[in-house]
Length: 80
Image 1: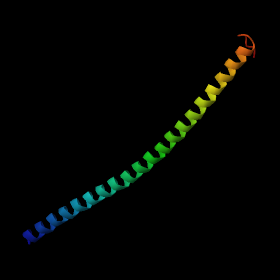
Image 2 (image 1 turned 90 degrees about the vertical axis):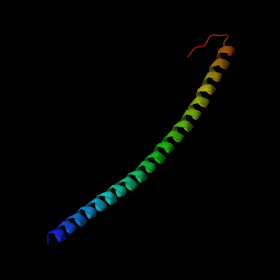
Image 3 (image 1 turned 120 degrees about the vertical axis):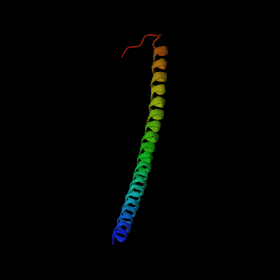
Image 4 (image 1 turned 90 degrees about the horizontal axis):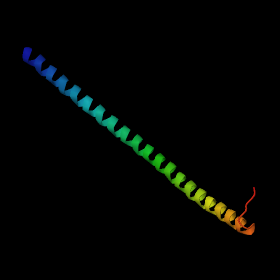
């Protein structure tokens, strides 16, 4: 009887270890998917910011060009 109960205890421990490992693997897979989703979202934000920066740089350059043209017209004096 003692041998059978020891075998059952060992089998329960093995089963418990298998369940724990399966749970950890599941958590890793779920976290991996969440991380990939977060990375895609961050990439989209970065792309949007790059596009905005390019647009603002072009607008800034245009404004400076307009400023310099106006300064030349008024002989170096510019009034707002």
